[in-house]
Amino acid sequence: MSAQHTAREGGSPRQLDLFGSQPQAKPKPKPKRRRCYSPNSTAAAESVADLTPGLRGVVYAAIVAASSRGLTRHQISTQTGISLYTVTPRCTELLKLGLIVESGTRPSPAGRAAGVLFCKGKEPNPNACTDKEAQ
Image (tube, rainbow, N blue to C red; front, side):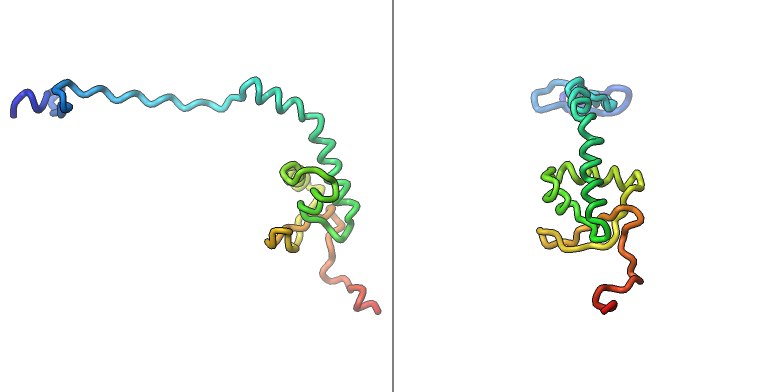
């Protein structure tokens, strides 16, 4: 083999490119960035920090007012006028705090099953008699 076709470095052959020059070294991979929040992200989070407990309270109040009927996230959004994209995280927070429970489903406007949220201790009892049975 001629030197034009291969070059030996450290005992291993390396192929030359079409123009006869040595191949370029592969670029080093960029180091993985640690998750750090930009000043804009931090400022945005701080600007809504005071609203979050208030919105959570509005969502919780709607669920409490619904009593044993319960509400889906979409129904909460419709009743309160708060965006569904805001209601959903507030419901997740309330679930994690143990203030509400999700039990059963009902059809959503999109036709899919939506979880029904109840205030803890107010969820329907499947063994309780219905109005029809009482008559």
